[in-house]
Image (cartoon, rainbow, N blue to C red; front, side):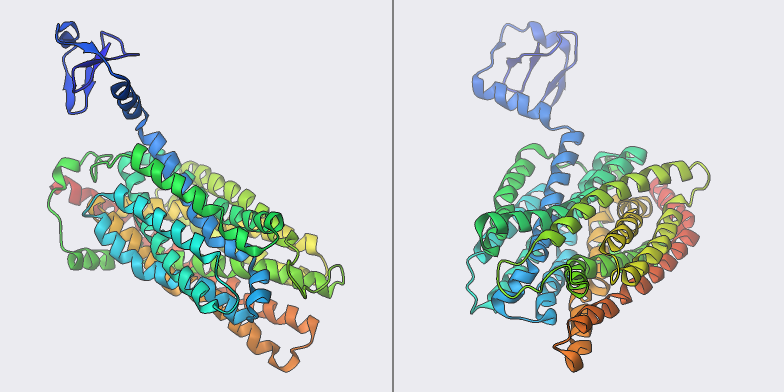
Length: 494
């Protein structure tokens, strides 16, 4: 039997075990105390709840919340064609929805990074989830005369989701270390492609079931409320640096300006952040425009008809969503396994695996635009391989950050990396691709073939940016060991 801090017996514990209490641990000798009394039902529930607050449970809940974050983000993309028809906006106007979301996301990220390094992280996370869930639900009631309100709502949702993305990886970083941390971060970042793919699927299915695209925005908020509650109840707030066994030595905090100066001098961090921006540029543009591009390809091939009234066909969004889920799973798993194997050969394995995967991805993404006019199946195959290679580096990039940034600076580092990757990446890419496409269509606005080609030419910008990202990962490999050793020396000197 065990005892909690109120002196009641807890069932399911051995009498020979050390007694764990809410305030610490006590001697097994206390089991025989005459002051013990049976637990009340509420106390038993609390004791069972405490046993559920394990690092593994916390990682699973945080990963579930990340799935919902990205599912909500790409639900709009899953019904984008319906939104365009409903509000009568062009490609640039539709791309603006994602751009304002990312702009608010990246502006809020450094603020939440600062708060996450100094205040209770799980409270900030849960409040962020509740906020974006509420705003998303309200946006499903906007009428066709108020497109600007839909744009504003996506801006507010970006602020809510920014709190989660900036802080939750640092909690996992403080719960695990070494290969366990790599594995748990891989699970966490698997949520990006999985949630993105589910966003397309959820949006399409909810729209078809409800008969209107509004219903696509009414499912994820309900799940968001559940996730926020689970974070409050089951996720603990670990001490910063506890997994690295330096929690007791990390009491002195530096100013935000000092943190930023240190991060700016960290070359591995800077180059990996620029590489992350290249990934964001490509995934942001692809997430919005590839389903549209494939629809136009089928119209050119005369295997499908142009959508003239709602609801539009959701087949390509469903297929693309399913591919994104599968490639995300494969990419993250292959990335984690490959990195662990390569670490046995070289200590620079993390950035080198990212660089090779990026350069390989660029080749297959280029092939999408070569084969799409003749074969949709061929285009899907190229998307599958290209996305798998591109998704290899998400969890590895986060692991690189954990290796080269001290624990009390990690939330700031994650937030500013997010700010940089969005500023240079997907904050502008959806709108930029749409703007280029609209500009190319001006002379041949009525040509179905030219609508297809113009969007393809605009998307051809993505593989060039991906190659640039691969170069940044190679630069990261040059400085990775030096920056990792600096962190070790810093910790030892504390």
